Image 1 (cartoon, one colour):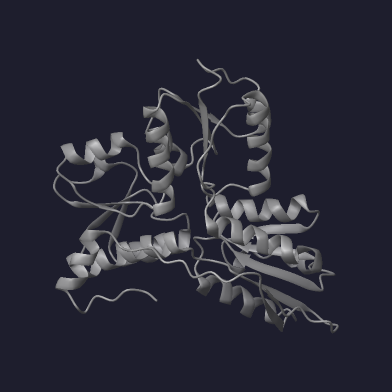
Image 2 (cartoon, rainbow, N blue to C red):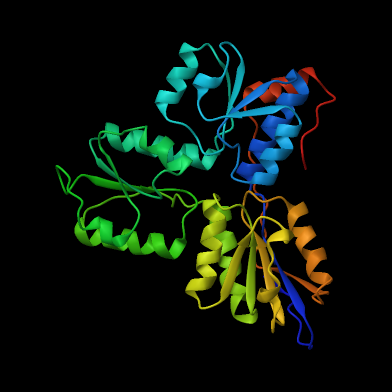
Length: 329
């Protein structure tokens, strides 16, 4: 663990690391970009490939067409599933429309889907911890809708009823607050003492690492800024983590969202980014804050992060047949 926070006076910017893109987001964006280069537009994408406005608009400019439903994709065309995953119903609709599917679902989300199917086949009632109407949750619920119930708080646990209290399992959305999820799991274990869960936690490594980094430095800062879009669950959780620790914190899509009142009397700002926010937006914030006197920039590395995920076979084949296509580092 490396912490280079300064001891000297003046306005300081603590740049948290790890921050920004996770392996699942890099993979998903690469899939769309390579598909556009290898096959040419139009390439249809079901939902936002990742929850970031800048990324979506950039891919739109390159020829990606984002749709809410596979029913909007012309029959026989290519469609990419977003990193958040889809339900079996969506897969069936794609098959009926003869769509050429490229699946950009994050492997860690796929892990949760596989667990849901296994628990359901083994006769368990499923409790999914997550946020209603989030794309990832909708997809996971679709794997075993008859036996799955959704909870978003410890209070909601009290109203749960299941056929057999001794055959209950829980799963979680991958982008939740570690602390909030821990409280919900504790409530579930109190209500269902024999409840079982996944072998390894479902909250993804990047979500955990970014929250840990915030906790590590938040006491040294007057303000935390999180680069990320409003519909990004993991970005919102970073703001919540700081606020729960009594620190002023704001979510910003870009440097244009920073209000001058936030900077009044502020000596030290901590800056991070959600897992779907590109580094170029972070650097724009760094440059903007330097014009406001925060030019003492110190990167605080809390833990290394070197995870990479492989690409789906359709994209691997496209790269092999078109050597000019590149993969992001």
